[in-house]
Length: 293
Length: 186
Image (cartoon, rainbow over all chains, first blue to last red; front, side):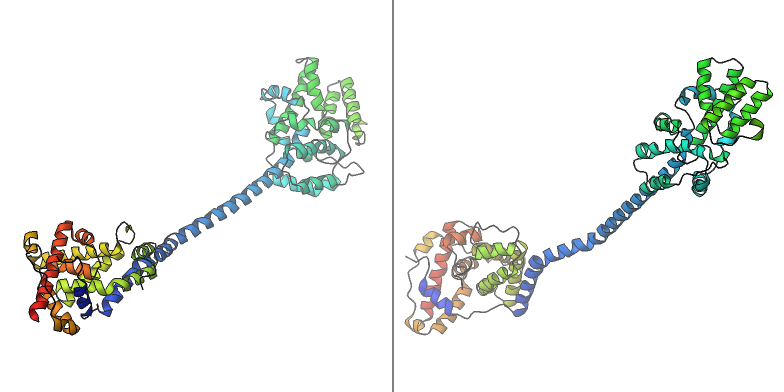
């Protein structure tokens, strides 16, 4: 019986020469084994970095840049909004809380609107107006205290993001001791001097919409004039005219004087007197023109 | 030394990217595998080509290797397949034509190796290689797989794709003929 493994033959076979592959074959195989196993992960990694490195860096740069741009733009637009909101807050102060009720009738009288346009609907750039006001502030008249009364709650309530510095600067504006000549362009401009109306003023921004301020002021003037006219003509009732008259109280002094003069020339002396006394009540420090003293 | 990591462990490590594991494995199996291919192919150039091809297949299969079988059985199976391709391509059809029946094997007497060859080991080895080269390819392969690959009958059968009995028969024929050749020469 033949053994499964012939040890004697195995020993003789092991004594035979032991040829080996050439060094070249060894090098080829080992190089291939390194290339396939070792080099592949490294090349894969470097390939990934090479392929995606630049796009990822570019995308990151774009994201960061656009984010910064958006932030700057948003901040800038907020500042602009606040800057434009500051003057726009002035106008509603001239309008009494009842104004929204009277406004539709004013709008429905097209004959009056052309008169209102030149007074306050003049297209003056908001920033320019604001700049003028800042420059003229020290010499402003006491009538602007009304506006100021309305402006403060606007910053405190309606404009939560208003620059604090701007508000403080407004508050810090010194109150003029003497009444300065009133400028019709600056209807209801600045200063402090709290008046009864100024106490009521905080309600104004809440009721008056933030609508275009020039148009709003124009409407107010129109309302006042039309109300007075209608009342004189006996077209509207007393309560309605009261609404209009209460707005008329907000008139600029010169306009008021003009109305009084008109009443006088029409022979309505009693009404003229009443208007004049009302004006004195409203503006006790204001110097009356010679013809009305 | 083979007392360290097993072939299978080294191959798995290489599959995970450990090139050093492959180098150990390669140096461990380089001489016997080359001898197997050289004695089957018959010339060094072909043997080197088959040898390199076999190892490249090992390298490329590193991720798919599973230690379900002995590493040597796996790599010699690859070498066997490469040899078969070579035999077919070169028109060497003798591989399957020398199957001998078990009954013929029964008739083979157990030969004693000549006494002088036992003393002259170098000459005996040369003689053995000469007789080995004259064996049918399948029988020589069975003997070489046993000697170089250290494979069992079952592993030889698995590597060459034949039944256990066929593998055993080939091996018996190979051993008997080698012994007969060593006796005859003496």
